[in-house]
Image 1 (spheres, rainbow over the protein chains, first blue to last red):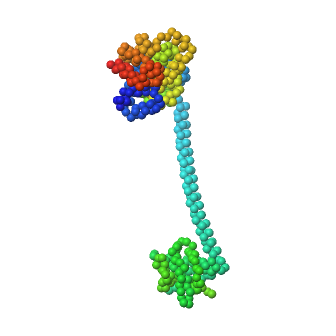
Image 2 (tube, rainbow over the protein chains, first blue to last red):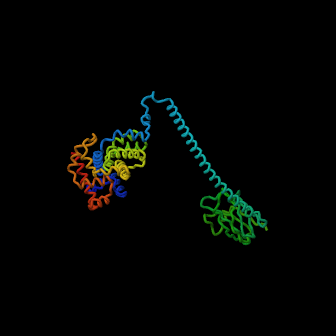
Image 3 (cartoon, helix red, strand yellow):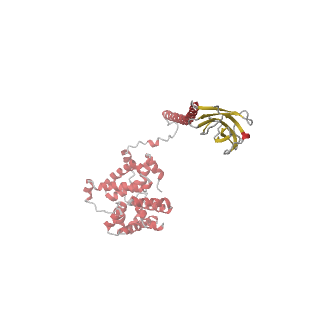
Length: 264
Length: 176
């Protein structure tokens, strides 16, 4: 730093004859090093002495002229009242009005922010409702689709009655022979225990031959509970058994929940 | 120390602050103007203009640009140099002989209380001719290093250090 100070750059900084770039550098050094700042102060003090000495006389008296040129009002002294008496009532009314206005503005701004919160709450609610509506519409469309499918004139309805293991259970198969689709209504089946699934079988009777149509692993107690499966078989009966998760190659007959014969 | 608080008040158009700033800087400013013009009447005129400008332009001052003293100094130098181009100045200049601030100092007998008169006198006595020229051009006239080196025919690289030596002597004279 001593070298920097001795370079003489600080004198030229106080003179104001450095380039912009050099000026920025000195300013940085001033912020960083107290000894540089100290040096600048001392240089400035010396230069002030030197320039003052070059004045013909002290220009104190010219201040009045300059003040009148600048149209000074002298108001700065009146800003701080010296005593209560000197503060006119109009000033108090002014302060009161200002305070009242401030209170009013604060109140208004709080009201505005309250309303803004309400609007954003409502907007959020609306988005939520739109989402719900969309889901409902999708559900409705899916239901209509299934309903249209099982209403078709070629569709055979096969009721499946509850068997020994679950006498209360029931199900229906709506079988569209033309499109080889079967819609299984499982709303009458109890919810399967954990680790178990229902498996749907197509049966031919003489001899009894089961063919798996699929596993109802998308069982959903809340949903439509009508499951679409492919059935390209020449089914004579349908059965539903409870099987371990993933299904079995052949039906576990003592877990036969429902069974129904296709009426010819 | 630079009166930062006062400068901030000046910038927000406080008349009292302006008066204090005037007390602190007017005599030095007057000296700078006078060392360019060497004329009391014209210097008074320019001083008034300069402080009107200080009042008007104060909000544009920022410590990042430099010292407040430097800022006022710049306004004063520019205003004084502008004045040297005026007709009234050119008419009077014919009789002028003094070229350096030193001539003013040598002629001066009454110093105001703010000045360390003994120190200044001492400085004038031991001031080398080259210092007179260097300080006059760089400080009082605002020449750049390059301009000063061309005018004085001394190498550009030595201007800065030469000037520091000259100012160091001034500081020594004043502190003793």
